[in-house]
Length: 94
Image 1 (cartoon, rainbow, N blue to C red):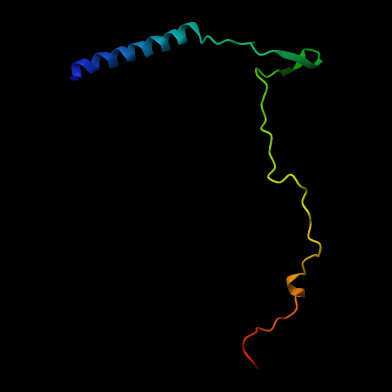
Image 2 (image 1 turned 180 degrees about the vertical axis):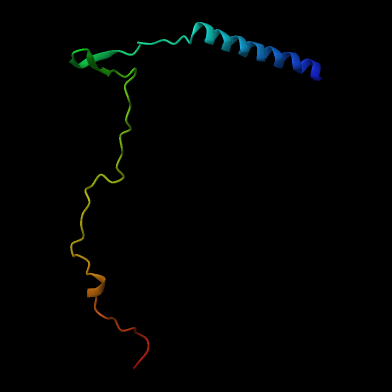
C-alpha cells in the first residue's frame, strides 16, 4: 500500500468521528433511561427510596466439600512443645 491509499481512509475515519462528536454536542447524548424495574421501599414528603430489581438473577456457585465426613479431633491432645520429655539420642554410649 502506498501513502495515498492509506491517507484517505484515515481522513474518512477522522471525519466520521468528528461528525459523530459534533452531533452529540449539538443534539445531546441519547441514552435509554428508566428501563430497570423498581419498587418504592420508603417515602417521606417528596423523597422516595427505590429498590431496583436485577435484570437477571445472580448465580452463586455452590461449594463442594472435599470430605463429606465431619472433622474428627485426635483422641489424645498433643503435648505442648515445652512439656515434651527430654530425649537422649541413641547410638553413642556414655
